Amino acid sequence: MNKFTLLGLFLLLFSVNDSWAYGGGGAGGTKSCEKPKFSDFSPAENAEVAPGSAFSFTASKNTYPATIKVTVKGQAAAIKTDKKNDGTFSVKGSLPAAVKGDFARIAITADAQSNCKGSSGWLVKVSE
Image (tube, rainbow, N blue to C red; front, side, top):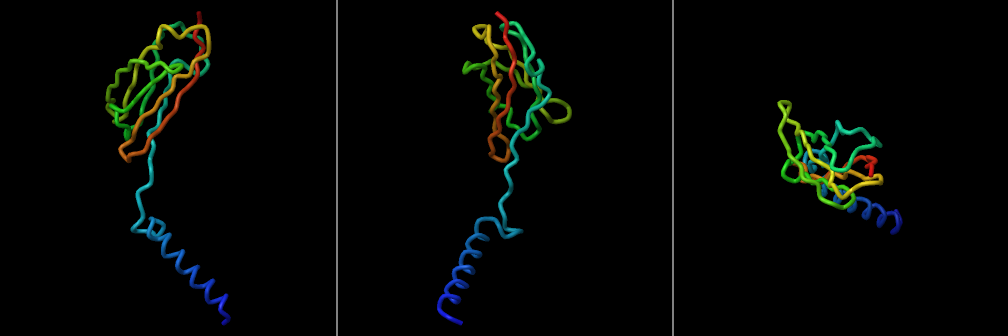
């Protein structure tokens, strides 16, 4: 064996051992990130609604309800969260009255029990 083959083999073995230390080696691996999920958006995507209209959605079981934040065109929306029988969370709120005459994204962010952040949202058209 020449010097370069031996050096290449050494570097290969060294890098494999380091990658196992970061969770790539099976049983000692780290738990994966499970982001919170959001569904059942109401009103529907691209629906036309009046200013101040109610909205609702469901957050998955792994969501910390106290971390759920909703903004509409950069303005915070007040929300109410209730736990459902299946462990998910029903979230209800109203669009800010100042948002009108344009499309607006109802943007959601929240933390999950696995310390992962999740986000989602949908568009509605707010009438004048």
